[in-house]
Image 1: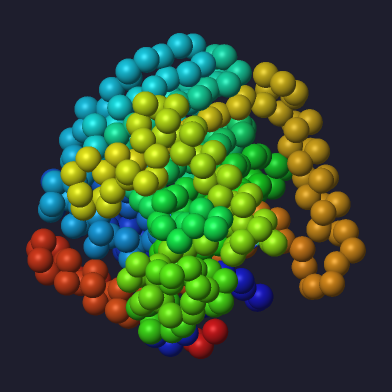
Image 2: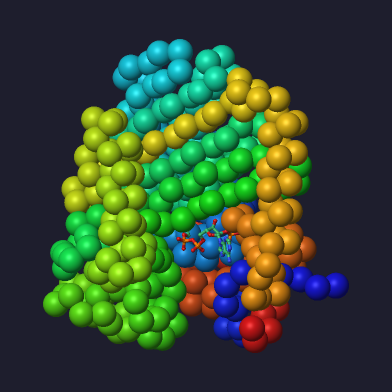
Length: 369
Ligand code: NDP
């Protein structure tokens, strides 16, 4: 059987069954005082990232969330409050809760409003890092709606021509149902998210040219130079030649919709999860397709468009659709287990020891990619 997995894995990774990893994360969070239901939402978001091949936003993030809890940066029992609301919109205050918990509730509210009013827009201020943007967009696609999700994040990206970290990697996700798996565009508005650099740093490898600049604004492949005063580049890369200014614009767009519209702030003032008042803001939108066209017609046209796209003239084996690699990776990993980098496994087991939960057992080593 031919299997597909997104990303690079080699013998330094071990496989751990999805359910084991999920219940490990839940147990750690519950030990630290997070309510069960909320722990499951956070775990679901992290495990979905790993299942979809987004290692940068999977269980390797747990350490940072644990720091956030221990330092008081994350409020474990937030009173998420509706500040203003109408039939098709709401503004929420996340009370510094887990971004995943606040985000889940906000998207559910957007979906409820879209059922009644055709469209539901929910903006959130005063939250925390919410993981992968696609998680929330998919919630809407699963109930036959178009879902859009965005968040601002701490400053890591220089604007076109700038050398200072000003913008966040501010991701945008849009999911739409088809007759098969949903279309899912889920992307950072920088060339890569910082998590990808962390993966390279952990492995001691140089980063590809064009991802980031050093503190003087020169393109660098030295990951340490990026962490020591450098910056990531906006989507489109260095300068204007390949559209760097457009990625820069998309990032500002996220700050406008998630940050300024919610009465929150913009990336430059967003802080780490471990800091108090990290001031992360989100934007969610659900569009009830049935309010515009019959859902079946929409799905049918989506599937036809995708089929036409995939069968258009190409120079490679296959034209991919957004979300497709993630769904295939998910299928593979649900059967084979999730690859976890050995160093990450060690970190997870150190957390286990410090909070007093059973350690994860290393599964079989993965084969060289
Ligand atoms: P990728 O570059 O890996 O993928 C971006 C999109 O392109 C995905 O929808 C992906 O689908 C799709 N894709 C990949 N290859 C192709 C192809 N050949 N043809 C068509 N579509 C393709 O994502 P990023 O590295 O930019 O972002 C990774 C994650 O990081 C996202 O989930 C994002 O939400 C998250 N993030 C979160 C932040 C936060 O602060 N919370 C900040 C920044 C990023 P598929 O998934 O199927 O590969």
